[in-house]
View: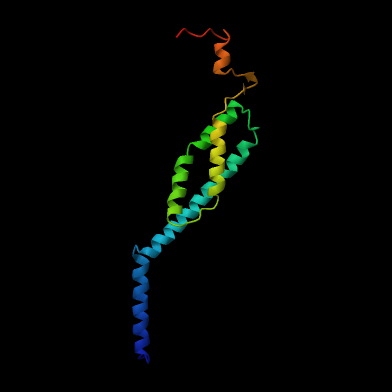
Length: 144
């Protein structure tokens, strides 16, 4: 059976060819799709990290922090610089990264918490450097 609409078939061949080439090429469209997917992946990481920090923060009062909780804060802070660089990279591409403002606020707060000297460790008092200099307990300081 002969096709009564040869020009339609030719048009469809051209369109299928164009579609096939664009799907196989590493063009701008696919670059944008990958960027958007990567941005969404970052937002998932941010959401997880913010949830973890919120859980850690329940164990602090903003002035005193147990050494085990401080360890968690320090561990949470480790990837923050890298995460912030990724956020900035997406923002430079005009993406709005959900959770980025809250992340930066929590990062600043966690950094301030990390500067606190823990007051207890498993129920025992932790002495500050000044307190250690004022006493011979638990060991006398070595002469400088």
